Length: 221
Ligand code: GRF
Image 1 (cartoon, rainbow, N blue to C red):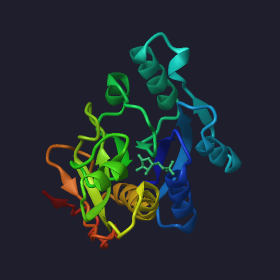
Image 2: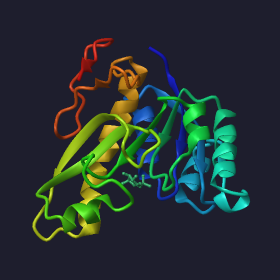
Image 3: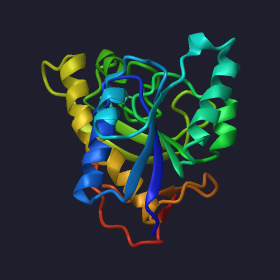
């Protein structure tokens, strides 16, 4: 059992970052956040991190010659914190080959839909537009595609009558806030191994609650 050193990448509000920090404080997520990185200098997630004394960095695409140069700069900056795991928590950019090479099978993302349905930037909106009756959220390993990497855990959220994008996303986020710290803790405890071949799945129930997996005995798919 190892306390996981995390680098969290966030572009926005940072409610998932907050959920991870709260779970760490509550003793339910065996990790520490060593760095919060963003592509946006005004991301509220940075302020949240700074208030908790966590080092922050900003790596803006516009400060770099092209996407590849930005990706290399991001990889170098994040590697400086030597994280065991990189967590994309509302990071609204696709990480590139330099990041993937620097952290092979060690980058996870939280997405507001039941992948492989509704990848991309508008998961809740797309779910509503398709008239699904259930949606949810997914934590997955990041690969070179857009929300295509191996699925680690999912939580289900029913669509309510009268839901709009904002109300649905808010309910999805309450599940994300349990699922993401739970996955990180499962990785820290060795209950979930981030090796894509074979893939391992943590035993979560449909609400995103971790069902006390036996340590070292992940459920193989
Ligand atoms: C979350 O819904 C996450 O699934 C998506 O971006 C949103 C980030 O929210 N990738 P927050 O910044 O953590 O509040």
